Each structure stands twice: as structure tokens, then as C-alpha cells.
Length: 333
Image 1 (cartoon, one colour):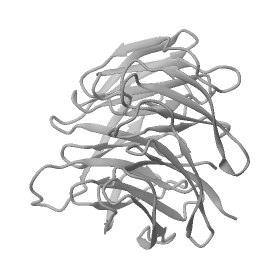
Image 2 (tube, rainbow, N blue to C red):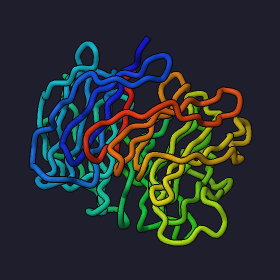
Image 3 (cartoon, rainbow, N blue to C red):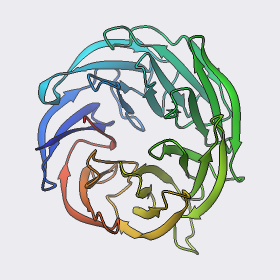
Image 4 (tube, rainbow, N blue to C red):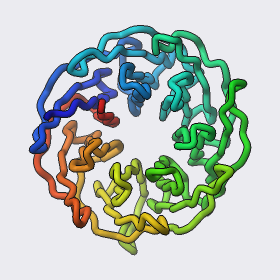
């Protein structure tokens, strides 16, 4: 049975709906225009509601509108509402109850919390706007449903907030090594471990999540070969649904780095690397854990890789053209 996924293409201001077959073939389903200001943007972040009935898209050009889409049968999208965001958001997410939409602004150095209406649409301005250290790049609710974590690339720190009926309150922070540039974060199944990708040196930090939600550093691994020179721009990080394998992308060497994860200790061991689409800013793993899909911002294609269940090795199956500057992939299931 085919799966539905969305690919955000920032330069076209479109969301491409694709189907992924059981054999790993991609096919076009629909193209949805995102209203708002014309002109290219760095990215077009997407987030799904917990019930998978609403898709949110944050436009990163002024006046920074957020659009809520209703998801109909077959993944068809229709605009429900538009709401203002306080700045250009590099990342948006929704809490586990579906009551709050969060945004993290890289240029603004801030995060926001916007209320979600009973029908799943965001129609109001943010209720909270909180300054952060420079270049907040991700905002991710923890599996415990209590904490929200914010990697700040320019501050070399991952902030921890508590979410209550009153909103977000900062309760802690986990520093990274100087010059790391923490960018994206992912939690392992069960929430006992987390992994952050550092943009500026392409390292991955493995963290233990202690009972109060704080992060304790376990391990730091390098995703690029020793001796790699020049500017580094690590981008995205994801785990397979079973938590056995972890993957990270780097945009200037155009590489997907592959890792095996010890589910008891949380530690990572290197499997190998594979060539990616050009400028792999965003990728995703399908809910079955069988396929990894990588978007190439410069190639304007999405590549599909089979994930070997016994080794985690990636094998490219094919590639599919989409719009200009594809940068975000979200599976509907």
C-alpha cells in the first residue's frame, strides 16, 4: 500500500504531494500553492498535527505568515487559515496534545508559541515570544509531553522549557562544545536518549535524558572523514522508527552519514556514508523504516534509498523531480 508524503519547495512556494509505493517508487499526486509573498526563501518548514489531519507551513519571507491546511482523503490539501508569526521560522512543531504550535527563528533569535483552535487551525498571533541565544534552529517537544527543547546554533546550547497551561518556561540548558553549532534534534523511541546534529563541525552529540528531562552528554562522533577542510554545513538528523539506525546529512560534501545505535547504551557506531542529492538540507524516513527520502535543494529532486534492515546500509533506488529548492519532507502516516 502506498504512503503519502509532502515535499516543501521554497522557491516555488509549493508543497508537492507524492506517493511512495511498497517497492520504493515515487509518483506525483498533487501540487499545492502556498499563498503569501512571492520570492525565494531559505526553506519552507512543515509540521503535522498529532492526528495527521492538519498540515502547517511557515513562510520565511515577510510578513512571515503561517498557513494551516486541512488534509483530506489521499493527502489532498486545502487552506484553512493564515496567522502571523513574529519572525522567519527555521522550524515549526506542534505539542503532543495539538494545542500549541511552536516556532524557532534563526535570524530572530527567538521562539514562539501560537494557540491552535479546536478545529486544528492556527488563526491568532503568537501568545508567547521568548528571546533565545543567537540562531535558534529547532524546537522539538520531548516524548514526555512536558518538555520542549531548542537547539541554538549561535549559542552552542540546547535550551529546555517546561510546557504548562500557562505556556513555556525555561527550566534548563545543555551546553555543547564551543563552535559546534547545534542545529537539529531527534529523540529515540521511549525518550531515554536524544541526538543533536551540530552544523558547524558536523558532529553528532548523543545525550541521555534523565528523569527531570535534562540532557546529559554521552558521546560525540564526527560525521565527516578526518582531514575534511573548508566550510561545513551539517543539516538534518533522523532515526528509524525502531531506533536502530541514525542518519545525518551534510550539505557541502553532499553526504548521508549512517550510524548504528546501541539501544541499551544509546551509543553510536559508524556504518558508512553514501552520496546524497546535491545540498541535502532535509530528509525523512518513512514510518515503516524501510526507506529514506532525501531532498536536494540544488538538484530539485528527491532520492529514495532502501534501508537494509540487518545492517542499516542505504541503497539508492531512484530519484524523482519536484519543485525548486525542496528542503523539507514530511510523511502523512
